[in-house]
Image (cartoon, rainbow, N blue to C red; front, top):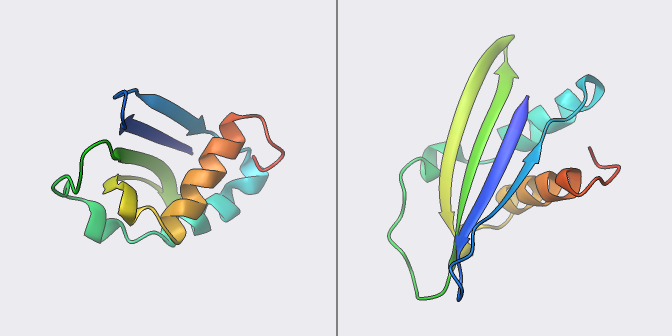
Length: 101
């Protein structure tokens, strides 16, 4: 299992990337985080909604019913809320070495 979050844009147009590869005992929690996100509505890039805003790209590879599944999303800043925000926060915390991973 691996989840990668890439943030681009903003005032300086900088690119940041975070990744999480949780240990086996945490996989069910991560599958739930990933499953809570509305991937179907975020599969197609939306038009930019303002200058200097971030664009978030999320790539998740996880097991679903024992089979590897890859999910992709591209979100504008205003769309990063609820389950998306929880997933992004978990990836960033994991990448920073937090005990959340």
